[in-house]
Amino acid sequence: MNRASSDGSSMWSPFSLSAQTGVESFEVVQSGPRRLWDVTEAAHAWWDAQGRPDFERFGLTVSREGQRAWLDSPDNPVPVVR
Figure 1 (cartoon, rainbow, N blue to C red):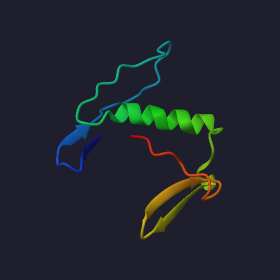
Figure 2: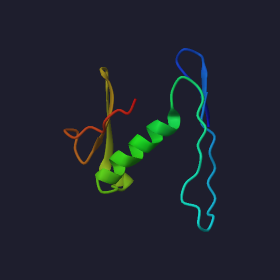
Figure 3: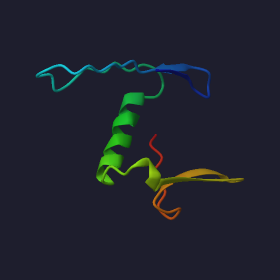
Figure 4: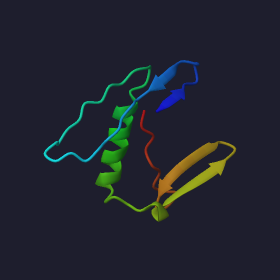
């Protein structure tokens, strides 16, 4: 995955996963100003802690002040992982 950040630098987090019998962990190499795999793991941990909700339970509110994702209700915002 390649992405340009707001300061123009690039970030990348290559990964591919294949089912291998007996393999329980994989090495991830990260580069750039933001640790994308760490963000992915934090987001997955939050999703898992919420009971692995389906996409139908998520919503998005967009206003002049910005945008906000939420789970089940606008009163329950999805945390921003940084």
